[in-house]
Length: 191
Ligand SMILES: Cc1cc2nc3c(=O)[nH]c(=O)nc-3n(C[C@H](O)[C@H](O)[C@H](O)COP(=O)(O)O)c2cc1C
Image 1: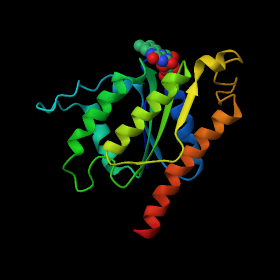
Image 2: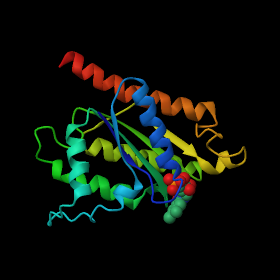
Image 3: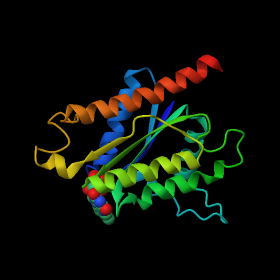
Image 4: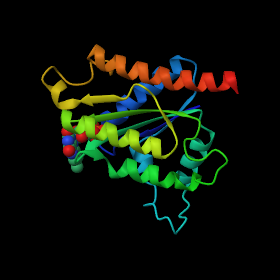
């Protein structure tokens, strides 16, 4: 199972659409997937390390990450970094700290950022990869950074069928998703 976490509450969220495309690419490689998008993430209680605020959404997210064979996380660049909505979801996973397999331990994690400028693309991608590292995940070699502002000049990030319009953008997503699935398969093969 590959678990996707991310997106925004905005209708047509680009980060969530790209996350869904990445999960589709993982499914094409034989993986089952589960998506925790902006709507669900917005229902998570604001994380408080001293108060365990259980909620159905929190419990579902924590259970899914515990069971995951790999993860894909997508965030917009907000003020040069990861959005609060996505960071709160990641903070929420602190309850996994004392698991025998803590946080993202032993799992590959692919990241996606959508932004409106290259400066935030690099900064947000780096921030998200640092968080994955802190949570003991294995960052995939390929991280995806898509610039919606640059794409606007050529008709937008997506084509009429909802695919990524630019073949290099599509290739980044495909390669990252395949790396997440391949790492899970390698782990299973060597035990
Ligand atoms: C509060 C806020 C802050 C943002 N800050 C930046 C920024 O610092 N740099 C940037 O390139 N884009 C910034 N953006 C643009 C978003 O990163 C961009 O529109 C992104 O694709 C939105 O993701 P979504 O389509 O999933 O909602 C910001 C947008 C919002 C709403």
